[in-house]
Length: 72
Image (cartoon, rainbow, N blue to C red; front, side, top):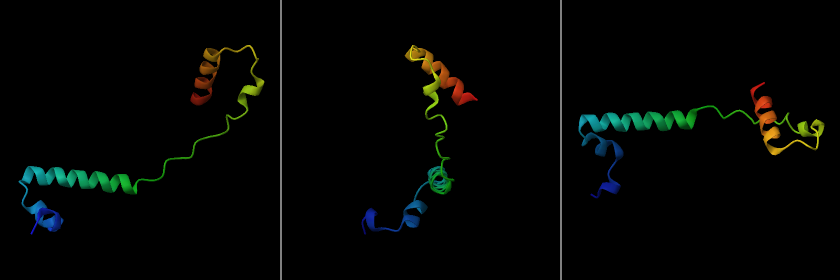
């Protein structure tokens, strides 16, 4: 029987204990990644915020203002 057709549990049993521990860690990581809650939705309350900015604002000024808005 080829390795590809053997049951996963059987293959894991053939690994040395240290590698079995790594497999367990990886499986736990995959389960955590799969079951973690969805990321929160991006806020859109900043939309139209630049309408109140003077037309003379430079891109650097706008970057600084955007950083302020994100940290409020």
